Length: 416
Image 1 (cartoon, one colour):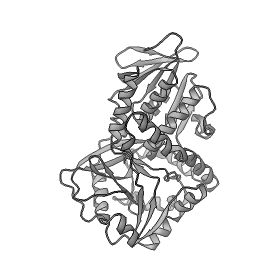
Image 2 (cartoon, rainbow, N blue to C red; image 1 turned 90 degrees about the vertical axis):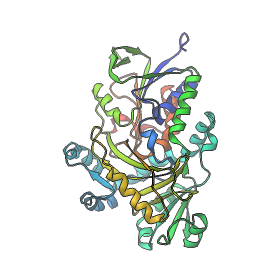
Image 3 (tube, rainbow, N blue to C red; image 1 turned 180 degrees about the vertical axis):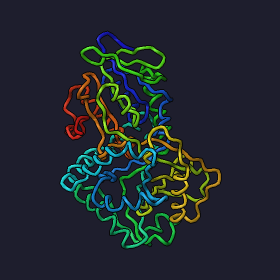
Image 4 (cartoon, rainbow, N blue to C red; image 1 turned 30 degrees about the vertical axis):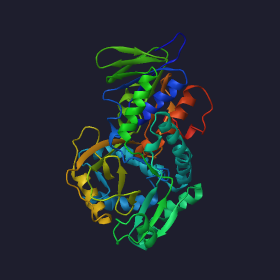
């Protein structure tokens, strides 16, 4: 409930990013309304891979990826698929993608991701403790798997990056790996333990609990779609699909991959695309895992969750409106069986969601450059859950006029 003189803020997007921001601003004394066309957590936050992946900040666009991209694109089961119908709309995005990955920029992009990841685990734990779910963050790490020395050597680039930025890892031989996870197939000869990559028991339950806490503390949740903005010398509110207008001192756009549509309404287009991701949730997998696992050469991940295990991976570029291609989910399950031969999939369910991605793999955490009163928090790619709590803290500091914990200049909306 608003009190006299209290700052009013609208947060558009009730995924893990937007809901975390709403909670942070509420603690800072704002009267906050959280707006989404769906219930909190029903977008990309519902089906992400449940991972706080603090080591996975390597820029996707880099020379080693460029060399492999043509082969991936022509392989129907490759880790990247681009819809032929949608491809013409991606030309500008891919030009920016390759330009972002030029060698002279690599270290700077690494540093920006590392700055967020360095805070992510502690910030996530604090957020989950705050809403009573602290025990739902695992204490085990993630295992990166390799079937050969050549696969391990191909991943050396990532390990060198972790060395540069001081992130912990441990190389395991076959015997040590078997002791940790006996279900992993003998074909896997080596692994790297990433001890600070943790798993959230149920990402959707986390966002739901955050929304419940937000509402219990006086916040308002509105089910509606934003169709426009009220503007004078600054943005003073939003219009909704029911014809009503909500007024506010501040508007935060945290609508994931849909934020690009909102930014265009402000005459501030941003090169934000959806990297469509798929998962398969297996309630009765016939095996137990203590760690999440990734197999870099096969481009999939398996996470133990409260509802069994979740298998996901790959990227599909096909826009926001195309129907799901469930073959993408089936590819990752077949590959997962290569590492987990006892995996059962009876009764599994499949899901597709939209990861919001910028060409340089760096999110926007920024005030608008063209619309005073508007702030952006979007483009977190594969690391939305990882970055959520840290983004919320930084956004709260930015809106409050405080000096953020890290330099936000690299994350500005007009950097493109």
